[in-house]
Image 1 (spheres, rainbow, N blue to C red):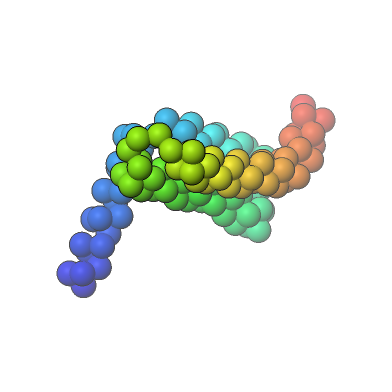
Image 2: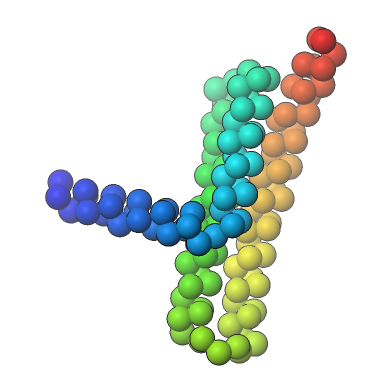
Amino acid sequence: MKKFIHSMCYALNGIKLLIAGQNNIKIQGVIGILVCLLGWIVTLSTLEWMIVLFCIGWVLSAESFNTAIEYVVDFISPDYHIKAGQIKDISAGGVLIISIISSAIGLIIFIPKCIKLLLAI
């Protein structure tokens, strides 16, 4: 149990460092909160909530992995190197792909519900 508590402390510290050092994670977190508020307004089903929360977690996790990769690259290669830049670009590209897919999923879920809500007014 002691090991588990220490592991949780390390993980929470990692989240704290991520939030303190990365503007993108703050923006993505705010977007996630706004999406959850919209989900509450349009009354998502259980399955829709599961999908939306998965997508939010997917994007935030991808951003955390991207940040970790950037930190490792900066540690290993403090001076500019084309390969270091390519590694960072590829990692950021992965976050972009996940963000685009998650946005598309969100649109598929939310557009019909928002239209229905607007027509009911």
